Length: 174
Ligand SMILES: [Zn+2]
Image (cartoon, rainbow, N blue to C red; front, side, top):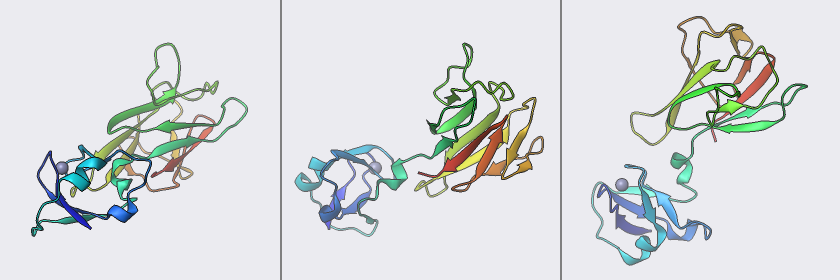
């Protein structure tokens, strides 16, 4: 374990150098999420302190945000939508809906802004929480085979199923 201090937020970290993947050059600070270069770990050792957080690899889970896996059908090719921190509007891709979370599909029962998935950091900022709601869509949204009520907000869990139009989506936490 190499003790370091995050150059951005100054939190004390302990890095398990034996588990750093050879392929990565930076990892995100678990406190402030800013990238710390791997080279910094070996060059900048500091004394232990009481606020030390033990960081071991692959401990970069906290840097990853969940995805939506779109199951293929007659009108939709298989695809994966990467969610981003903040508000993600998910629906049918078109000339007016070109957001990175738009789905390439011919499913006309899917609205262009069908659902919203809000990605927020948890209170301890170590992970993300995912809120799903129907965005006043024409044909409504099924969550694990039940209609989402107007105003209802769902907290997504890994492998939850969402259906918009005739297209099924599987939420993957990572
Ligand atoms: Zn930091």
